Amino acid sequence: MIKSNKKIIAKDYKICKSIISKALGLMFSKKRNLIFEFKKEKRISLHMFFVFFPIWAVYINKEKEAIFIKKLCPFVSSCFPDKKAKYILELTKKPDIKIGDKISW
Figure (cartoon, rainbow, N blue to C red):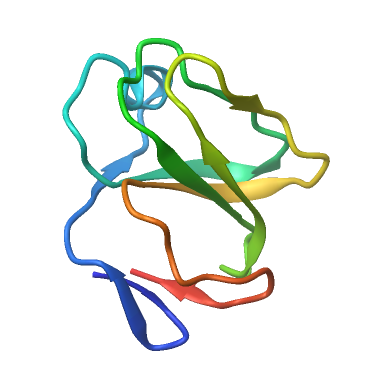
């Protein structure tokens, strides 16, 4: 389960650690929640090419605090926040998360 301040955000998810799983993300796939895990904090861009449904991207720092949240729309959205993240959640439903919330899984 993915939780924010002890509230359940998602019950099912897949962790993406490999270069290929992070590169593919949700392209050409069904709706599901993903957690991208990186070895260190860095600036990370996302795009919505070949993703057929909206998602909410939650960037998380090494302390597992939400630092950036954005809704992305199919084919047209992208983001490249100024902040460095170690994790990114891609969620299929709008999460009840605010900047600074602690995230756990």
